[in-house]
Length: 145
Image (tube, rainbow, N blue to C red; front, side, top):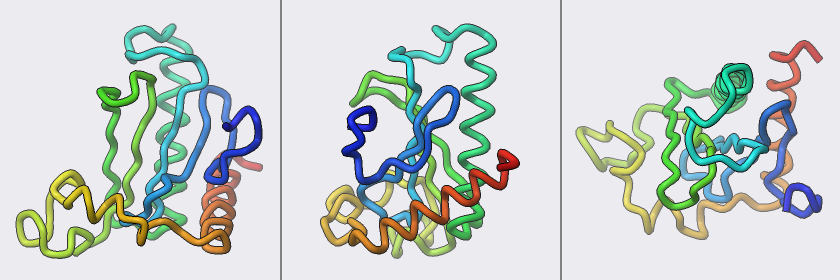
């Protein structure tokens, strides 16, 4: 969808990957960074590409934190469901688990799936556009553009 220009959540193309907002936004600013090349493990990357991919991921994470006011960032690189290298970047704020977990604190997977992936968490097109622009501006600032 990104290559065809039809992904409404696409934000930016970087050297090693694509920046895409998650379609569910319980954690406001939830973003994915998808490797351009189809590989499944970090150790499969050439050293220079691996270094650049990790560097770009941290740039995207910093941009997410700044654009969406994160108090802490959570990073996941799982691949069990979609066997392709990609990062899940979750901006976290106090109380974002709505009472689930340990006093409302804990990993994102403590939040019930049916709530996290509820249609209520999908941004309307105007909100999505504003989120994409905010994230894009922060990425550009960090890249000196």
